[in-house]
Image (cartoon, rainbow, N blue to C red; front, side):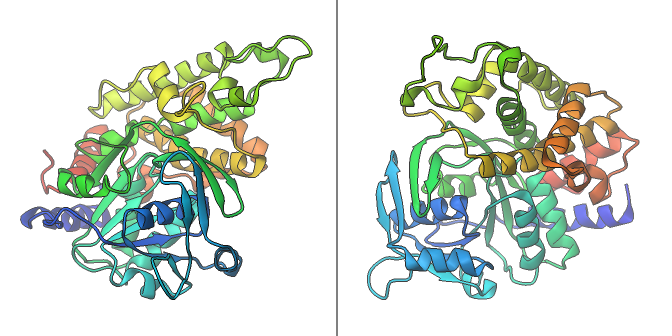
Length: 399
């Protein structure tokens, strides 16, 4: 383990000598970083619960679109209605292109958007954070909290903060401009860094009602089944794959209520998902994490139900490509990195990375989250397990 990583784990461990950062178990001041669909959803949900909400975006087009609209409109399930933006009177989401203005008084800060934006936010936040603030990486995927902590550390952050990694949002959505049509998402794994700050997770349930708390971000990271469900479903179809989950008679068209994400997962896709899940379980076991969900449970969590209130909509091409990119960078590459240290082979995961990279026209695996990028020795699983335990629990000497 490198000296840089030793310093990192020691810095993280200092938080164990303090009380949990949120004694009052409630958050009323929310900052949302990112003006994309995820950010808009979280901002609207937070405002619906009576929070004071500020939203940051570095993109003028995003801010202009928000300000010129009547607000963020939620339809379908959840707190339906239109949530105003930058109104002088009454509750509204306040937008800004100045980061410090958004985060300085925030109790909880949501890092949204694709992985590369979450990384950028983590790097620029280092100089702006103070003791007691909570950062939520949503969705965190694999190693999201650990990477965020590392980026904050190398950026010079010394504040006593809590990082929350959650594997999904409270709702699936279909985006049309400022309108988001919602359906319920399943319970999503979540954990805190340092671990065992359950008061923070309980406070967040006001905004993320579907948080399913786990003991550490090491566990919640291995519970990330997003890419192994999304990528095979989005890129593998056609006659060679046979029928999907819903059979359509020749010449027929699917009913609109049957056009769901889960409807695209047929027997062939399930076979691939099963192989990917087996590899994830194997690697997780090597790191002491057991009892991961079954194939069907993973599909239910990350693919939604076949129909009804918990069904997930089929993404448009732009969003689908973003899911491929984030899936490789934030979910599949971390697994191969952990497998390499454990000297385990994950051929199906590696093949899916190569296939997705070719579809996207770039070797995006090079940008993936890797344990070695934060100084963990790639030749020693015992050292890696000990180091990850130290980070996850906030202890100098692991568990």
